Length: 318
Image (cartoon, rainbow, N blue to C red; front, side, top):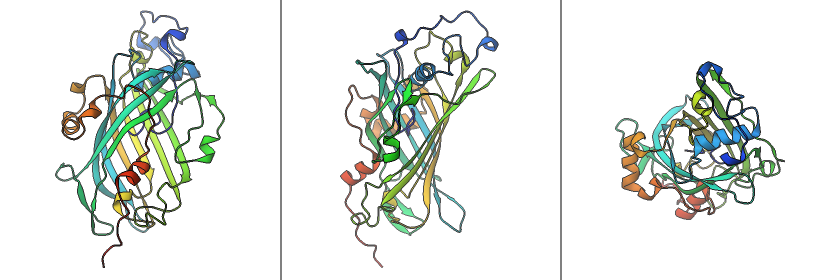
């Protein structure tokens, strides 16, 4: 869920001990601000530490879990959008120090399962209403997602996006909004890159030679938690919006249109505080995803996993 730091774009983090910040005094919420007394959220260092506590736990012995639940939408020219399937899932993450420089890598396992919106039952096969074809669903199961968090944003190379990869480092600054003791922010990414699914090979799965993906994750937390130095992690809720071409398993090829996700999101340090239907589903299907990776290994993007796990579909029968 993606993303949770910027879902597919990395950032990094400075260890708490390396940030000179005043201790949190006995104060009331109306004395708190984006500038303190603990974090200055107008600086790269402050944003880095805030997002590390949102997405992980500075107590390196602890995990941080995220969860999401929402809808897969479909859009075609000349007609209204459609609710296609439900999607629910979770992630398990830990922080690993950089070692050679200030910061951490958030290492995460993430899974998600499509379900029938009427019955709530997980579906492994589904009749696509756009082509009236029964297709085998590919659920989300990413065994490793790595997201470095640091005071600067560096160009991230995903699906060989040359524009993104060429970006020079810039301060990691998010746009924060406060309302009483609530603080809000959002991270967005836009991808235009070569499609790993070659349309000459994956004729029914590939949307074309290039792929466009837009990702947006919002975070809502308590300002008093954010400015509490004693907290090694900060709980949050939010939303995840993900716009992309047709999912390859839908066998839509280069047909006009696209799909997208809209999900509620949340976090917890204990599995008991996650939606229990999601936890039980993961226990049944991917129990190892209840734990986080213990070391940094290569991430495998979803489209690359699709090519590894599937073969090109035969032509549709008349």
